[in-house]
Image (cartoon, rainbow over all chains, first blue to last red; front, top):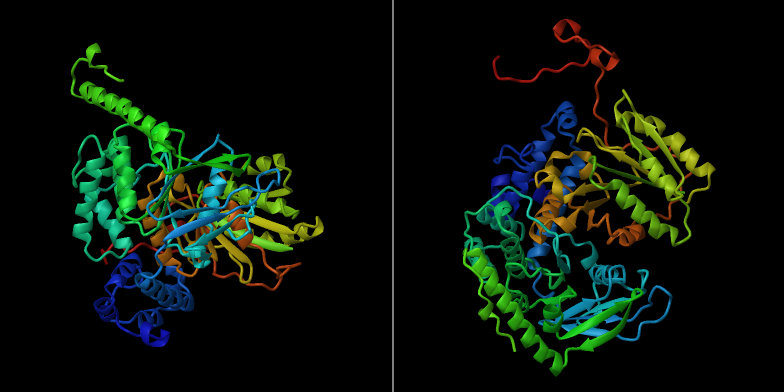
Length: 338
Length: 230
């Protein structure tokens, strides 16, 4: 629809035809009060003084209104943008030495990134997020589906290519789990909000050691519950095809299930971790040294066997934790690890 | 010289974003200077000096900080030209939410943080709505969901702007910002340019130092709240 026609539609009509615009009007309620009028006429009727008071520029406001509408239409139309693979083409480390490996990661793969603090993990993640095109300090190039990627990923605020889960993340909003998930779902223009919310809480409860319900305030969730909710929410609601995880703490969450959930939802999972269980769960691990990818290690059979043992140790610890939580005593004979 | 105006609510992370962005600009051998505008106090100039960044600070004191900004911007520009800067960044805090120090044809960046609450974007006026780039900070301490909701709220009030997340601590995203802020258009003066938006006005007895309360002492541009009694 052209701009003139659109800005002259009355608000009721707009909401009826384009339900996703309702949120826009409630976000700009100080201006758009009378829904029987069009935004254009509402703004035209304002006096100079009212414009000053509301801090509104006529042209800018209507342009923004039309722009937002078009962006949302685009946003809803994105279906053919499936990301199947991500390729990192080698660049240079901090000393200017060429990296040795290109790397392609496919949907459903889990990759660990290892290396000491300051080695360049953040830069690698930033290169991916920015869809580097030999224009970042590492001169790496990122391909999506084996092709030069569309630069729109850089600037699209609604469809970031990367969702990030970092270690010290918190919920800061003062809402219940239900309100919070609805808010997020609405911002993603989800149609079947109730079902999506139900699915997220079910998955989150499968990950968390202690279950919680929809009426729990998000700020009172435990660390494990928060992480479980964040992971389930990112897996199901976030459209970003790549998920970057900065270390999942062990406490109160089943990390294997968490990774399985992300993989099931067709994400590419990259995680910066030094935890042996997580690192060995990954198919490959990228070793970062001095700002560059110095090698890529494939998880071999021996390591996979080791992973099983480590998981037993982990399970044992979880069991003991549960006993402590339930107020019971710990017995020495329960320690059986081959 | 390139002039870039950066503003944002107090403690939103403007200085951290600027410092990290300058790191990236310096690597391209650009000479960058900063002018920090604040109201009563700032010691950010010490921080900039420590990093060998040429800096000037201006405290507006008893004046409206934005009026003070616009009254000084030409002199500040001349300072930048005189010391041969490639890029001059002005940093100012939007203290009243109605503020906007942006100038037409001069790159305008608004810094706002995820912790400020999801209703903050609609509370901020032209400083956010008229910005070319909106930088969102402190994303590392809130959930992915909150980041997405916050960014969508920003988009609702300013869909035209490039919105980006920057981590002021690690600098993730700052390099990327540094590639977006430079313009081919070089300036040597801002004389004759216009503000993007008028500044909030006031000219009443209290502007002139009146302290006594009551209608007898109120002169000039005075407005009363509508409490619904009349």
